[in-house]
Length: 612
Image 1 (cartoon, helix red, strand yellow):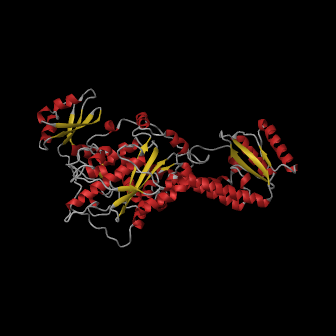
Image 2 (tube, rainbow, N blue to C red):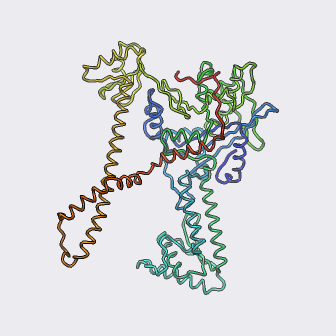
Image 3 (cartoon, helix red, strand yellow):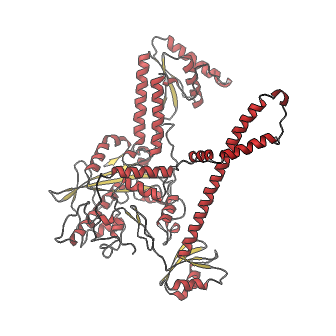
């Protein structure tokens, strides 16, 4: 089902219902790009840690937009032994709904746009009809603005005339605008005198002129008129003034507030289906992901793991879907729910988000059912909640990492020994062939470039590592160290930098607070002293403190350096936003967990390996 801005609200209940009744669902997305820096291949290397890989990809991907979100829900029909599917294809675009809402800036990657265009992607549908969305912070800010407006309306009752700088006294109008405002006032006077005309539409004007109009009318006509700003099809803004009594004015005010509330809900839009994940480090990303999707399964990881690894050669989505139609797998029996369009895998609609989500679900069903063949007696249908599936949950496949197969969303990541890996630094003019020449005596090696002057080199035997390190002791053009030494040195540098930053910040903050307190006390001292001798010291100030002043400063400094300063510092060191979010998410996860429920240990029949 195609969902765009015009039919989003009318179909939202169908989306909620489909998610509520589903045994599982699959998702997919199409974005405006992948990396705004180096290509993903050049950006990453085979010995990235999960933290390094996450930070690299996050750094170069946060300014892209999600254009299309695909959702396909699957519910098993036990009577007919088939899955009933409901697929949704959402076109999304963060269109600002008014001048106070966020105006999102984003980037596009030409190769990604070219690829989507070659697949027949409809960009006009995104930009003209995309469903808007807000992240949680943007939604919070806009709702606060709305609530403030509503309170003003209920209190003062004159919201229609209020602008940020409204006053209850005559407004100072610039000389070049006086004629314009006088003409507006004259037109309003004619409107109030007329028995036929009820409304007055002013010509489109600038934002500054509209501000002057609102301020002038707020002071000059506190009652009897209603003022509103509208917009033409060409996005030109103009003012409409209506003659109203108090009851009608309040009614229109309530209508305006109701419209703004509806616009705000429209702006939240697609966020009702899923909130954007942004601005978090790796641990917060894991917590937020498991909060939104408590049981997340990556079909690529599943297909790359035993018992599938030896019988599936290609795990790309299209090839995986084809392979899972062949022996020893059995394609699942599926049927689209009434009122939902069906997909035909024979025609392949790849890179439409809804279709990709659909075949992702098919791949999962086929692999899950295959696991049932290992049971005694064998099971034809394996539920998405089966213990057989649990070893695959909440692990995300890491591409092109040699010895860490996945990102673990539920705990610490794997820590491989990498005792066969070396870190090598060398001149910028070196090439891959130079590295192979350097390690020619060590047999087969693997090289993963870090940058122009360093790389990881993987040897076939750990015993060779120390020999290689020893050969570089007297070398002038290159240096070799073990992977453990490299990681240890990086950790020391990171801790040293963090300690220096924290110590420096605390020292600066201590001095700032110290200075503030001294300044305040000195000001009080000077006030009490100089207020008695102002006539004799006017215009004369010694830049050097007197002995009394110096003594006072020393006493104040000594006094605030102990308990009071510690109390002040404790108030001046609030939790960072990231830590606040992390704690909040932990509480959310705790609240979402059923009371007294102890999770069962995962089945041991199939285990995702620590290394491959």
